[in-house]
Image 1 (cartoon, rainbow, N blue to C red):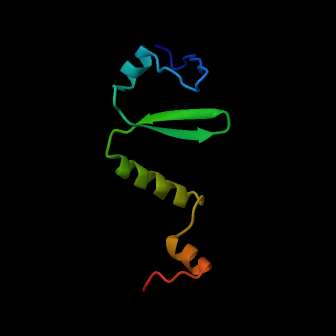
Image 2 (image 1 turned 120 degrees about the vertical axis):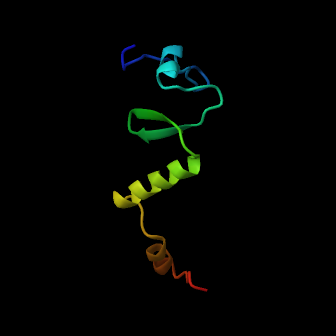
Length: 84
């Protein structure tokens, strides 16, 4: 299988992941997938671990990349006291 496949979006916005792609990525019915979005691009990643662990790793990466801010900094800017 090549790493590039062509799929068509149906009228309801759905796509079918081809059997060969599901097999290569070890995706089974009921699996949870994460969607990473950027302009003109959608990347699906199978959640191998607990989704909360994956989400925490994603949040940490976003923070380190400067796409979010520290909760304490946000609370201070909004006048919220977290120590009450």
